[in-house]
Length: 200
Image (cartoon, rainbow, N blue to C red):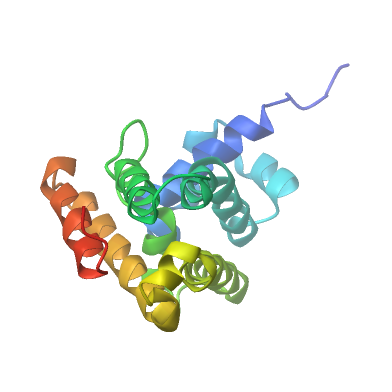
């Protein structure tokens, strides 16, 4: 039809936006960066995704669904020792942070670091904090209700154990983003699990 605007793949455009935010953060990602990566113009971005804030929140959801969700499944594998489940989860996470086909670091950790200032809109801050709280909750629930965890008393320190691992992963995200290699941070996973009393 004459005058009809060209169609584009919204899923592909959202994935492209996700990688821009992952690499540059909310503050560092300009509209020019986003439209170039997405292969669309500003009017198309606004009509399809709203604005930069809404696009950021959608991209966070894309990151969580496509890149983070699968890692959590390691924690609940049946018939697998707790140490092995945690190691698989941690290793999958740091491999994702190492940038194998994706930007280095962690979208969520980078975004959370930007909440300290006043540059992020409230909806973006709320979405980031909700995602962080959910990640912590899943680990807390593991330590609190897992039978092996209960047997060695980790259930009594479930919140502390969860934050211990979250803090570790925020640290690995930072050093891998700065250019360190995966092999340099992998030993820290073993030390962390040993520190929980889950020695090999």
